[in-house]
Image 1: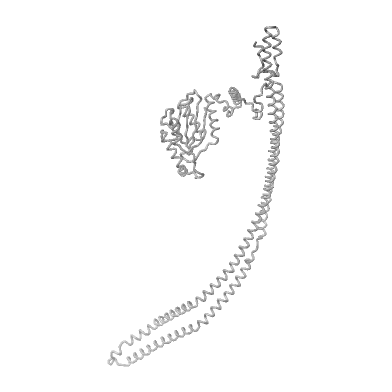
Image 2 (image 1 turned 180 degrees about the vertical axis):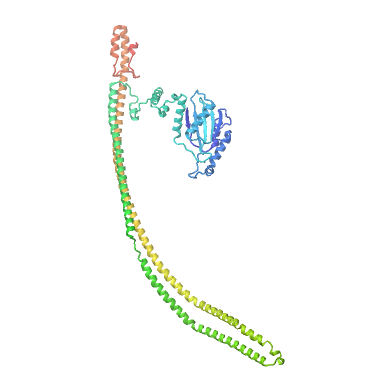
Length: 564
């Protein structure tokens, strides 16, 4: 199994058209073995692509319907495309391919997402394309699997292991296997596979590999001396580099710990000072006193009220004196009207009494029309006396009320003017108190801000000090690293020169050995004719031994005499 995840995309229509048709935007679908949908209400792949696009476009409505808090920006790439490829020659069934695709989606966290499967058989191996909607069809949330390539490789290992086919990818098996014993076996298989492919895994650094490349006669003494010499230098320099790295890490950690402690100590000190100031202010009730205090305000307000009362009484006295002639005239008028009313009543009673007396003195036989009704009128006058009196008094009271109301309206502007003046004086006094309080409040705020600014300055100074120490340490360590880099560069340069000299020496030796071999072969031909017994001696003299000084161009010892 070889899984692969493509980049995220935007168009469901485009990727669906690719996996359900032949290549090059053809309308045919000969390479498609089957299609299958998942978590969709249609089996038509083209309709499935439209449904997934609709779901992605309405993610916000899905979130609202599901009660999910809306947040973040809208996903611009809702399409997720992956493929599962089987080993060449393997013939999985449709059910097996669908099962593998579903398990892969569940492993990536797409178990509840809309998906479209399409299997292809146009290559030497069967493979399954899967198009997934990253938008959840119910919650509207966007799923983004972290490190999906590694997770797919891990799933593929256990999928192959369950089928007994993990040996097809030993490197992957060695990476993701949990069992240490089997992991070691897979590592051996991976190493053997690399060797068969001609890939050496000696873990040699590139400078060493480049320097030793094309160097022949690895068993020669000179080759081994050069290799051992630079191996020792490399080892010592590597130890020095590791020690420097360990020392640098410890220095950074020590510096960070010290800085953390210093910041914590400064913070604790500032917090203690802040609590001490607040505790002192609460216990002693120390506050910045305003320039105009509440006690002063109360005294001034009491004095102002007394002054205003005096002014008000004076105004009322003045108005009373001004109104006195009108009041006297009004009451004189009312007294005159009352006297006139009583005089008229008295006159009516006198006339009625006189008429009644004349009537009583006149005999009945001699009484005429003028002697009738006097008794009834006398009775009515006596009875109506109280009613007339009450009506007259009521009219007097009404006139009196109207008079004093008009008098009050006449005097009201002066009273209102005085009251407004008094209100302004009281407002000015209160404004003076509020202004003094605001000044004291601002003074308190300024002191608090000064204290905060002092704390900030202390923290900033400490931060600047720490930054300077960071820069110093960084610069010192950079100098050490530069020195080590110079040593490594010198080592690589010396190694390259040594191996270059070695290759030149070998080239010269190869050239001389070739000429010598030709001469030896010619002499040997004559020797066989002249004296066959000298062949063994010539062969021994032409054998260079294990130092490789007379080896041929191929790097193996010469066998010309023995072959002859």
